[in-house]
Length: 421
Ligand code: UD1
Ligand code: MG
Image (tube, rainbow, N blue to C red; front, side, top):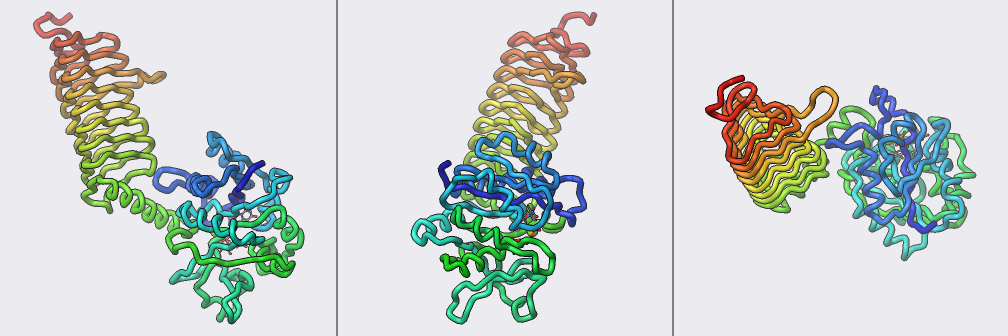
């Protein structure tokens, strides 16, 4: 096996979430927390990612099913973070080289500081490089103890701290690079002589040091990187931080966001420069938006939406699995599902595609420059030809395609001038 590898700990119960869902699957900006950690590890160079599962194992496996570089190790009983890493031994049998060890409940971890740690490891050949952070409020974290010369001594868990140690503001964010197979020796020696009666991974660095192996603690992480989610309150904080990162990136790329505090965009979307997003808009899933589009206020662009350049999506318009070609517009109160809307077409207020008949979803195709009138319903599958007009309030029924250039009106819709049936 070629490395580096990563071990992500995700077997804990997450009791404080009070949830039937595994903690690492709670969503931050539309995606499970663990998927951000997987991405960070991969982004830092991990070639294989071992996720330790236990509580809610099946849910976690299902959520990560599509990730080609992820494998799973099973921790039967949650005996502590040290035991969780030990559960990976069989999966990583025969591997020697660096291994990240990270936790699945810190979704804000970025690939850059992890890559820095790995670079340092290439130079230092240490048994353990510990990424640390200096934070204004260390509560909840293990503290980093150093000697008077600043050399790393050990990590002490908060519960095991005396008041002086508790005041230390350099903390352990559970972000390590260990050299394998050396780590396995240290894990053999862990004991449960601590406040929680668990096998603490945090004892491994000091143990390695006592085995005369090199251990360094490097403050490479920022306070925001290490927000750990243990409660719903933390989840909301993680969401806010992640959202501002995503919006900040988009603004740097040339997207105007009128009110970043009231705009929700998940990280999987791509948005072109000179597009303006008005408040209370939600963009979720894989969404592509071209240049110079206008979105919102109150727009909802869902997974599979593609907007070409110059598209306008206004208030209370929802789109899903739909493409709008250059300059197409849906300015007010519309639903477009499984639709293709041709260039320059206009979807008027209150028009919708009826894309679901209770069993299957059907496709609606709207030609270039077509005009779909106010309050009309297009029952899929159906095509409205190029330059055609659907009158206000018309119901275009399934497979009763509208010819290019034609005008249809009424319920059910028929060409203008034709007597009703
Ligand atoms: C751990 C660290 C602490 C650090 C903090 C934040 C230990 C002993 N302490 O504490 O120094 O400051 O994270 O990074 O490591 N897990 C398992 N199996 C287990 C126990 C835990 O997979 O048996 C997983 C959990 O799912 C979680 C992660 O390990 O993703 C961390 O466990 P958690 O209980 O949250 O540890 P903390 O108390 O936060
Ligand atoms: Mg934690």
